[in-house]
Length: 241
Image (cartoon, rainbow, N blue to C red; front, side, top):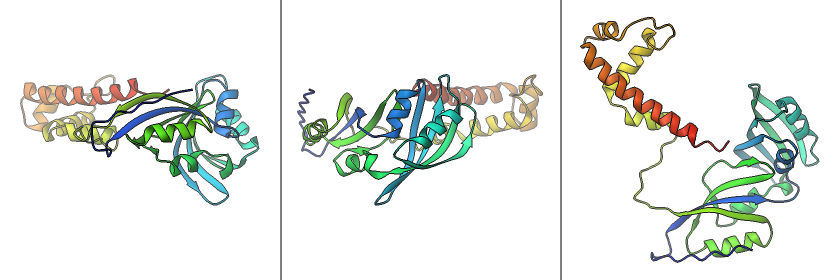
């Protein structure tokens, strides 16, 4: 049994970001990912009604099973009413699944004081949640959930309101970091075929067309490239799967 002791020197309104590993009975996502090794499911959005939940999911196969096999298994699950493939990219697909609301833990999470702040990642028969909760309520909320479900607290950190504001996505982050000149040089190089292989044009030729010197153009270009690569490679390195 897990024991959490929260000691906060603030006024009780500070928050914790918590990572949870969770299992509950009767869930199609847990049973499918447990049966098929190397399967990952990401919840994009959920739309509950009184009786059902319609969910938009990303389905990823990194194992020996193709997407069609996985979708057939999902469709055959006892709590699933229908499935639809929106996009199929071979080892990755976007699917819509309608299933019985009673099998979902989402209403329980939402009605607790846990607020999901990241897409839920399901793999290996477990759900991985990142939630926000008031510091002075974490211990009680976790104890109540632990009494009903197989739940493990994997990480916990205090939320600092002075931290930098998060960006909507990686593109937004890159756009914010690039100077106007860096953005212009990157697009000019891309449009001119500089990044094609074999390269269709030299940096000096682009600079001449752009009306600046070659060294100045390369300085803007390299600084912009470094920001783009750093943002995307950091994002890739932090993938959940």
